[in-house]
Amino acid sequence: MNDLPRFLPAGDRALLVEFGSEINPEINYRVRSLHYALRQNRLPGLGESVPTYRSLLVYYDPLELSYERLVEHIARLAANLGQMELPRPLIYLIPVAYGGEYGPDLADVAAHCRLAPEEVIRVHSSVDYLIYMLGFTPGFAYLGGMPRAIAAPRLEKPRSLVPAGSVGIAGEQTGIYPVDSPGGWRIIGRTPLKLYDPHRQPPVLLAAGNYVRFVPVGPQEYAEIKAAVERGAYEVKTLPAAGEER
Image (cartoon, rainbow, N blue to C red; front, top):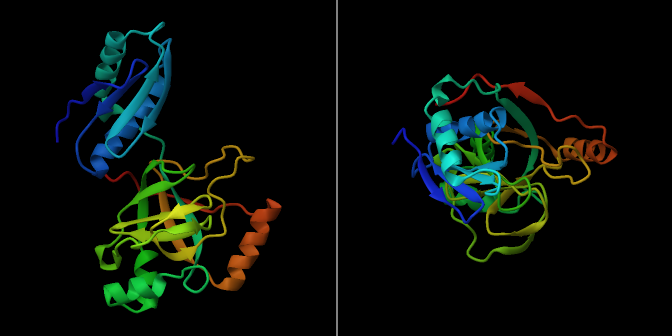
């Protein structure tokens, strides 16, 4: 892994800062550190920045800020990322009803992995998943750290509609569909929480750098939480994380 970032122009109003070529917690930590450093060290003409697995896309106004000046500014910040102290991450506790109408592919995942459905649930809910980035649809979190023991291939034929809140597995990835959308992941459960709500501030529940812990619930508790969410009376539970994985 190269400690020096790579700078690539992305059109005439953005700069791509690459820290590596692999999905790696330490690389992602440096991406998020630079994202935070730019928010704390503003320049006239500097726009928003968008973190990904291994790079940061930085928007800027070329009429106020030159490409060369921006690269110089970011290079200086990148050289001191080891001194950055990021906000302590949170663990979001996400209730999930597994199997049945909520997880129609749970049995198929269990058969593929040669495990009982209950064991798939136990393994899936035993990990705190790092949120590497958001993308695909509003609020879709790309999670890292799913055990290989429950990895399963995507569906051969994607569904035209996957309900919001569906929890899926695709290869060695797991994630939650924040809105109704097509999808090819194998659905093993569903959460009653709203990961994306345009009427809420902020509209997106999860944030990169934090963690997700899936908490199994039964149908009755799922219905109770869903009703509370609809009334605006449910408060998402969080815990402080032990520390950054680097």
